[in-house]
Length: 125
Image (cartoon, rainbow, N blue to C red; front, side, top):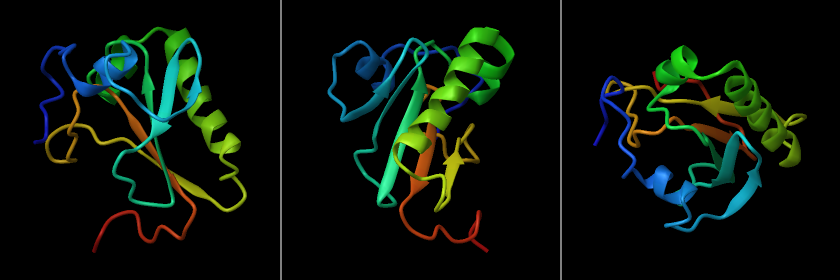
């Protein structure tokens, strides 16, 4: 069910539980600012989620309230994951869904990294 990104952060969301070690994940990268792991329902040969370690509901929340260090660290983590997965030469997509109309399903900021195949148009026509 899509979430409302204007609601306060709910620390019972699945990504908060993963960050606390209460739920497992297939980790590919972690640093002080971010955790990256394989999506459990991949939509491409490479489908990795990257989440900030801070409690942010959405990109809007993060960009308005995250510290400069958190924002820089998170953006760098996304790039590092793409490089580590050898996606740069072939190309990849980074996607963040924000709010109901975009289909955001978890109330914790996350970006999807897709790659490993031609990805087609950005939006279905």
